[in-house]
Length: 391
Ligand code: NAD
Ligand code: USQ
Picture: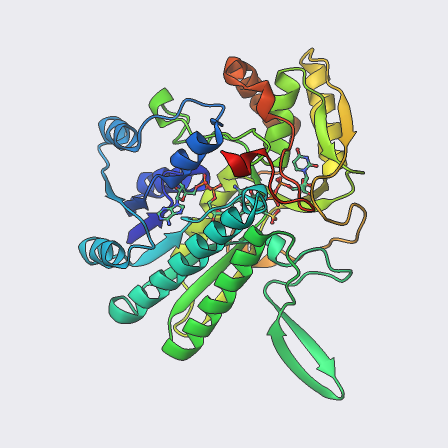
């Protein structure tokens, strides 16, 4: 099976491309490397020294004998996109290639517009390309659990059955996202749902939780295959950030009360979930939704777990509740379903002491690369126009 991974130079995409290649899929990566460019513009860097994409792919080939095709360009350039698809002839398109940071999207008007035009238009281009020349291909689209927000009722997988004034219907689950980034994912979901309905396309929306960890079997094979690991206040995500903060003796940055509960998963499960979706494609005309996470934690509880694991390693770990730069509930109900991927055979890697231990040791290994000025959040939801807006 031929799988095109858009965003294949990124955190989830790189791990997925190698995992699928290792399992015998014919893999292509399509990426315009804009994430590396944004890092440079913002003056931030991944904790890990990532090699140029050409070197990464060459090293993979040298080690395994497996080749990965590279299409370097922008999904928003339609002629580039359609020509790449014609050349590669995908059976599945795994679409990771978007701007994925909530704080980035909240810097100012320009970053909000960039996020939504990059994401929503890019996704629409893929839908049109599929409609025109690849109507049988399966779109596996990375959405996010944050599309749902934090409603005071259980979160279903994409759809909810409602009885209203004596009548009953199954409708898309209500969306109450918390950033212009998360909103871009909601817009994508609506566009994909509509395209499946009118053109008979097949798609799976993977509403993924926050991903943690860095090593997969493949990216751990060689230093040149190392994955990115973001720790800064814009692209760094909760658990990964806490481990790196612990490694450099920086107090763990819990925003507000820390009662915000989110869905999480290990990057080793990200790659497996994508494979399960590809191997069990949606039916033509179906917009299928899977909630892709394995566990739910509050931010405060995660910080406590990192502190405990850090102390065991001899680190001095403090937790600091800092003013929340976001507008979000800090104490709320959160209970989401995640049975679809388990039913397809997912065997989760639950967060364990050994994973925390390995992530902390990984962070310690590269801690000399940390820029301490990039730890605290600088983007405010209430007051757009932070320091980054001027860079
Ligand atoms: P990332 O920033 O590491 O990777 C995204 C990649 O997409 C980058 O290599 C970037 O250059 C590329 N890209 C962006 N816009 C592009 C365009 N217009 N054309 C071509 N390439 C483009 O992000 P990630 O963490 O790997 O996230 C991948 C996807 O998974 C995103 O869609 C994100 O919303 C989703 N997701 C991520 C997480 C997480 O915790 N990291 C959680 C849930 C969902
Ligand atoms: N948080 C802290 N301290 C930190 C960082 C974050 O308390 O140092 C809190 C935030 O306030 C928030 C929660 O942790 O309540 C999660 O924040 P995050 O930055 O880890 O994750 P988020 O902004 O939601 O975005 C990340 C990815 C995004 C993906 C999303 C999945 O960047 O691409 O879509 O996780 S989800 O959260 O399920 O929507």
